Length: 294
Image (cartoon, rainbow, N blue to C red; front, side):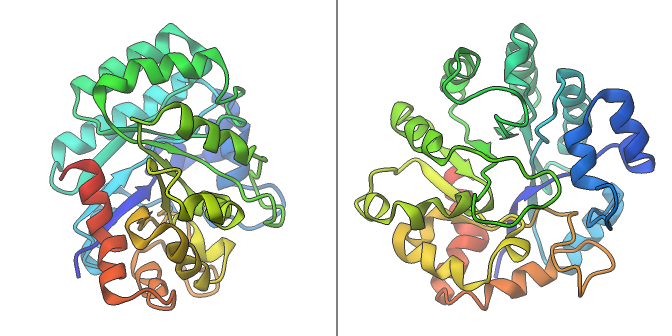
């Protein structure tokens, strides 16, 4: 069964070598809290590009989508974007990339979008408004929407479930803002990460009525957040066509079973979700192919 992972992150050698020092130097304390949380073990892996490709091959993952991080500074965005530009040029059949943006930074954000368009990026994100000190209702975000409308590429947004227990890097996100955004931008597709913080369950009548056709939901970090049955519950509301497979690799989302990052456990985890074989085929590859026009 074909597999495409719609949500992974990779970082530069400098970030991996000394994440605490790099975060301090670049003013990225939220990233540091996620990848090297003070006083507790980190679940973050630091694979090389070559190891990532080996992990993909081992799990028969044909392609991954590199999601940008929600950096607090525009310079950090461009550091990661340069890495991703190199990877999609070297391995165009294995890696696709979304551009990392810092919307409040103004003109440099517009320049970053144009730069990414010229280099074959195929989306925007992962964006986390609260971590990046803006709101989806702010003018800076409306300018981003105006800029990318002709590009016709999806936007991935980080979503935090208010009911999940505290965890490193957790910052609340107002769920209603995502619904307002979808309604105000009907021609723009959005991917809400982490199953959208269970948004379809909380607004089941609206989703069953098809009120948000431009919202999709990825499974990134699902095993750390929920039992696998939640995927079946949400798919019965949205339809399996709205769910995208994503792992948050190289985050180790099975800490009791993993010593190193990988994809295979997450793929196996989906088999416990209650989805039909056809539904699994949609989630594992069909939906992201259709969404991206591949």
